[in-house]
Structure formats: structure tokens, C-alpha cells
Length: 512
Image (tube, rainbow, N blue to C red; front, side, top):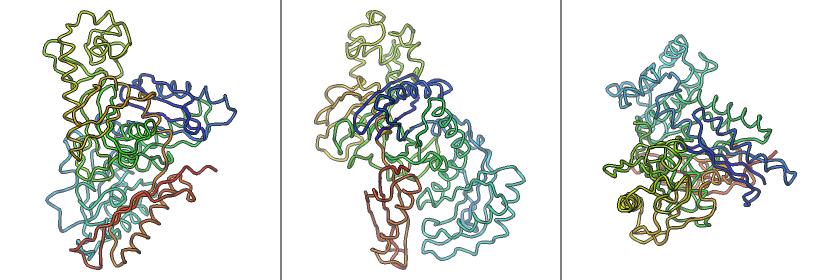
């Protein structure tokens, strides 16, 4: 099966063409300011190698930072409406009450709080009033807003209020893009509401991004179906992924971790992915990134939903070093490294310049860093080692030494020895591990929900069936599905034998 994998990073855009598990072609090009030019250049290079076997390309997998960048930059976000079904509770903490003021201003929310919701035991808090929902929907329609997030208290336990409210809003605004919080988040109302609102603000960008990628593929003569990578190490059909763009947050480092597993054959290890601007340290468990089980801040917003457990550090190939104090980062020259780093003719001292001066890698003009004091170079390398060692130690979950796989374009910055690491592994093609991880990804479906009134076996079976349906909708072949994880936790304080069940299934791409 012939696939193209593309990963768009802040500094570089990487692309690979694989046939089965054989790498046919790969390329790393600087990410362009308009993003798509770099994507087209990388795509054209690898697509040009696809005709050798005479077989067409079966699929294209694309990992993008578009959605994360939009939140961080407070740009390209859509105006949203929030409907919270929770009165008479929660009035003192309205939606977006904990958002940074500049991000809140960027989405300019229209907020409605209405009666309804449920208690923790599934009983109605107060009856929901359909006319309140309908009145809110009419005001949203009159304001010209079509992206709406609906949340209700304890909706992961009882989805009734959100589903009914969605139907009412749809009857008033037929073309509305509606995000129901229970489809994304977990029990905490504010965190679940936050991720639903972020998702709503990004859905318009999701559609335009998918269209832009589609146009780029068409220009390159590639007619294969294409997928967007997700933050659990899998992919979903692009049109499906565009509906829930928040699932693409942190997909870049996740792709690198999957690529690291592919390149080394290890399914359990630590991975450091060194890009041009930052490094991300994570843990592979069973060949997939360990999932975070706590609050994750995205652009300053508290969320609690499916995210990889990663520790970012301000260390990359383009990270700026102060020549006076030796301070490393946090600023980076990013995609401008080819013009601003000293070895490439610029005047900014970066970690890449230090690496060239130390003989760790050959690139650019080494003569341009011959004037660097060897003691300064040595001290800088020691600071880099300390940064990596401290972060590596934070992410370990046991005192035992574990292998560390160094991938990414700036992997040359990782020292040969790290305290707590049994070995530091470097492999061929590590620089495009992110694109490789995208290219060899499978499709997943996940359910994380509270069930009551069912036996344990019935609850797990129901969750498994729903997860399988979600995987098929995302582009998986039903015949290839395997259950990857099953977790169930009885909730003692809820009646009816309530238990939280989390099931994740994974399968191969379905080809028509």
C-alpha cells in the first residue's frame, strides 16, 4: 500500500512516500509563511517518485499545526455562541469566565444560560425549557452566528439535554455547525465547555484548511483520499476531522512518537522530538503516546479531553542563544533559520550554530562560527543537556532506566548520554519521523462515557460497539478493527451500577 505522509511544523514541512514499510522518498522543506506553498513543494517532490511502480497512491495523511496556531495566535477564529443548560446553578461562573481576555475578544461570544441539566445521579436538575433554547437560537440566528457550542451539567452521564437542545437549534438555524460538549470532553463542566467552544471557533478554519489541502493535492495530480492526523496517533478522513479540529491539537509530536516506534521497532520508550522551535518529550506505551489524564491548557484555556501527555521545552534547532549571557531561548528564529542563523549567513546565534561549531553536524558554512569560544560552545552544550535531562526526568514514571529515542530535525542537539536513559537511540530518517508517523497511521474510534442501568459486560459491549461505529465513520475497515484499550471504573456515588467505560479500537484504512 502506497501512502504519502506530510507533517506541517512551525519551522519545517516534512513529507515521505512509503510503500508498505519501505521508504521510497522523503524531503524536508522550510515551512512558508503562507503554509500551503511549503506543502505543495514537499508534496510535489514525493509525488514525483510515485510513478516508478506504476501503482497509484492509496492515501495521503496530513498533520497540521493550523488549529493550534490559530488559538495561540488569536487569529482565524470564528465568532461563536455558547448555550449552557445549567440554571439555576452555575450562574456565577458564566461560559469563558476563565479565558484570556484577548482570546475571548477574538471569538466575541454570544452567551446564553438556560434552565435544565442533570444531577450527578442522572436525575433532572430542573426541567429544560424548550422555549428558552428556541429564543436563544433566534437571537443567535439574528446575530449571523452559525457556530454554536452546547453544554449541560453532567452531560457525559445523560446526553438528553444537549441532544434535544441541538435539535431545537437546528430547527431554527438549519445550516448551524453545532458542537455538543459530551462528544468531546469529560465530566468537568467548565473544561468540557471550553473544549466545545474552542472546537466551535475552529470549525470554519477546519473546512477552509481541508479545502486548501484538497486543492494542493489536486494540483500535484494526487487523487487519493486524504486524512488528517489526530492527537492519539491515528488519522480520520479529512472531512470528518474538520468537524472536530480540536482532535488535531498536538498531532505533530504525536506523529513523531509513532514514527519513532516505526523506525526503532520499540513499543515502550521515551521519545524526544526536536523541532526548529521547541522539543516535546513523551512516553510510548504499546506503540502509542501515553494519554494525559489531567488538565491541559491550550492557548491559556483549561481543557480536559483526549490529549497526549507531552512536556514541551523551548529548545529547537532555531532556538536563539544570547552571546553575552549564554541564555538559551525561549525565542526561536523558526522557519527563518536559513537566513538568520550564523552558519547560513545571518547574524543571530542559534543552537544549530553551536552544534556546527562543536562538530555535531555539518550544515551551512562552518567558517562563520570559527570565532566562537570553545569554552562558550562547551557551556552551551552542557546547558542543553541539563534542559533535556530535567525534562526527561519529569516525564519518567519509574526509577528504572529507559531508552530515549531522539527524532526530529534538531535531534543532533540531544547528547549521547542522559541521566536515567539506558541508551539514546538515533536512527536513519529520524528527521522525518513526524511524516513517517503520519504515513503509517491507522484509524481509531473512542468512547469515554458513563453508563448506568447496565451490567459491566453490557456497558463494555455497548461502548465497544459505539467505538467501532466511530472508527468506521472516520474511515476504518470494520473487518480490520481491533480493541486496543478497555477501562472501566465503577462510580460508587452514582445509583444504577454506574461506571465510566473507556474503549478505544483501531483498524486499517478502508479502501473502496
